[in-house]
Image 1 (cartoon, one colour):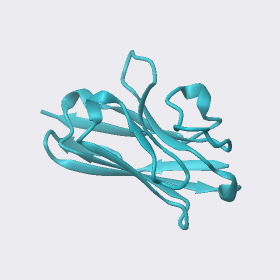
Image 2: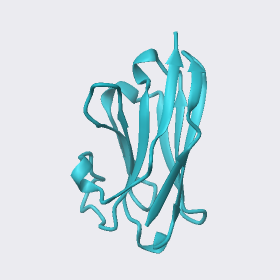
Image 3: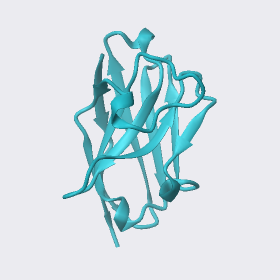
Image 4: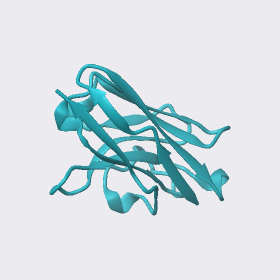
Length: 126
């Protein structure tokens, strides 16, 4: 499985931005997918995840109500709609995928995902 993230850039606080992650290869085997982010000097952290059916999602507390994760399985694409971003959302955003279906909820740990995209930089100006 290969993942290609795109859509990052410079956005003003309070604006909006949509990230995309195109999957290729064994896309029929992909189960849970997620977005993580890593700010300079910090560890990679969970942002949001979604199960294959798209009916179950989880969010990191600071992005709840502002970010929305979604996926189009027919197009093998994962999205992250970022509304009202804040300067503290500035980071490199990574998409991730797992071939194993979680029992109840999608995973929030980096070790829950075996496949990673290259990252796309999001800079939020104040």
